[in-house]
Every structure is written in C-alpha cells, then in structure tokens.
Image: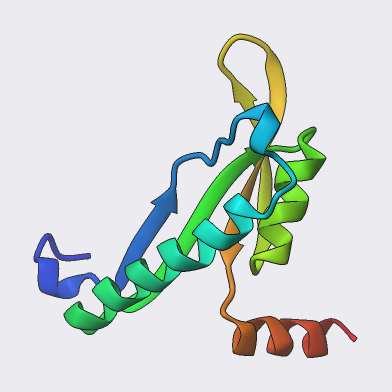
Length: 109
C-alpha cells in the first residue's frame, strides 16, 4: 500500500464509547445519538468520495451495550482477548447499513 492519502479507499470511523448516567439509561438516548453520529460520519466520508466504515469495540459481558449496538446495525466481526486491568473478551463490531444487513441475513439463510 502506498503512503499516499489517495491510496486509501475507506473512511473508517471508530465510536470510542457510549456512556449514559444510570438514571438516564433505558430511555432511548443512546439509540437516538448513534444514528446521528453515523449519519454525520457517512456524510464526511461521502465528501471525500471514500467508502464509509464504522466500528466499535465492546466488552462481551456487557449485554445491554451489545444489544444496543446490534439494534443500531452493528454486527460482531471478531472476538479477541483484551487485557487492561483484568482478562476479558472484546467484541469488535462493524456497522452495516440496512441494505447490507439485509444482504448478510439473506446469505446466512
């Protein structure tokens, strides 16, 4: 791969965490924010003419977060060990726009 920015064909956006106060959880706040963030990132990628890609990493033992991201169109692409202060497993999830999600579901059946 060339070091030239023109050689890069993807605009990769990584969501680096989504946190809400305990009292605010379950009210749909994160579910409303995530599509707006994805819309913004998709627009920025379009301005450059590059393919839009979005990912997020989440601990596997956080079912609320995993479920939220799945509802927002993310799918797990890899599980890997993640050691900061304790051993755990991280899920790397990639966003699939609705048309790609439909294709992936059809391919699995």
